[in-house]
Amino acid sequence: MAERMAEMEEDIGDVPAGEDDNDSDREDERIFAWMGNDDMEEDEEDEEVEDEQQLDTEASELFELDTPAERSGHIAVVDRNIMYVWGGYKNSQNHGFFDLYLPRNEVWTYNMESGVWTKHVAGGNLHTSMSGSCGVCVDGVLYLFGGHHARGNTNRVKFIYRLPLRAPSLKWEEMRDLKGLPPSCKDKLGCWVQKNSFCKLHTFVSLDKDCCRIMDSTVNVFLWFLLLLLQWDSPGRGWNNHIHILDLETSTWSQPITTGYTPSPRAAHACATVGNRGYVFGGRYKNFRLNDLYYIDLDTWEWHEIVPQQGPVGRSWHSFTPVSPDHIFLFGGFTTEKETLSDAWLYCVSKNEWKPFKHSHTGSPRLWHTACSGPDGEVFVFGGCANNLLSHQRAAHSNELLVFNVQPKSLVRFCMETVLQHRERLSSYWDCLPKHLLHSLKQRMAHVNTLGS
Image (cartoon, rainbow, N blue to C red; front, top):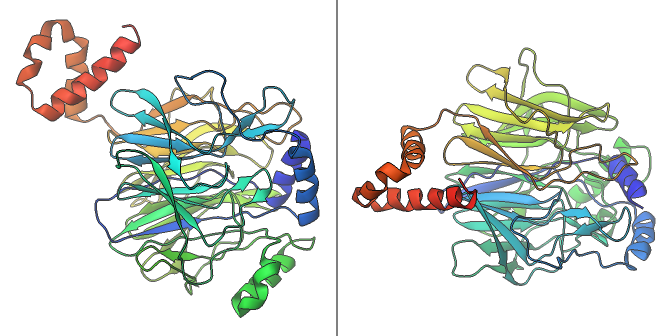
């Protein structure tokens, strides 16, 4: 079963997990969700459902864990100094090569100051466990769109779920009153965020049987369906490079008219936002994984192709994370030769150049992981698969957290580490510190004690 499901994933186009999420204290922002790779064909899906109905496809733990379970296809976002992880799937422990989805009411948080994981049970209305969803954090609220579950892609395409992260308790809410024509069923999504405007979702790549059900509602959907048929060899399968927008202020779906050098249709590319530019790197088109780079001006909707000298090899299922106003961090992915990568690169926006990034995690290849930028110039890569997800062997899903120090540490961070290193000598003076620094020191101290040092 796992081998067959992997082959289906390869047929419909592989896609990375949710990309970087940039937070903001402003109320008027836009979200751009990218890249949707849709459902398998109806007859194939029904055959899979018959098999999967014999199993409990939502994982449950018999004992309490101190860290999240291994997983791929999950989402991760950052609010303030906390990383939130939800969803994804892992190997079944009792059913051979079957995959199990992580519980829908389970949210894990990672405190970037203390280094401590905490499990939370969220309430509210979330209809199923999923992998490959799109997640983004805006002003302390996690928005969730799309995803794949045991019966295929979610067909609740008009709905987006929201989870207020700063409330006393976590509770999912369903946004039901969205206007306009929404995208068809999507899974394996990621997001861009731009400040000072509206919240929008941008989607690339589709493979969708459900567009047949709604194609008579608008000419645009009908043309989109034709594009799907023209771009691939079998009916109902295909690729596209359309953009879908959700305005969170008016709760309305729309599609912009773009100009310029539009990227080719693709799946599994990765996106990043720097200023008013939305960047797209790599991805898979049919049997090839690309290493091209584009950006779209999010004010004018004009596409631009970038041709830097030398750079990373083509890949899909990678992460592409903004780490400064001038740099984007690339890690991992999957090549045309089906090699899982552990290389890292920094792309400099102002110089238009790639530079290899040396790190200590070269023995930890990853695909379909998540990557979040922390407050101290770090990138936190969590989960993903460490081997060839499409091979005959058991998938090596991971729950390891890889930390990359991409930017130089701040003076405050150096001072904190020095104080902790000499804590026995200096702890009597801690009460003289400002409250926020004292709180941070105690958080870090708790992590030191947990490690037994």
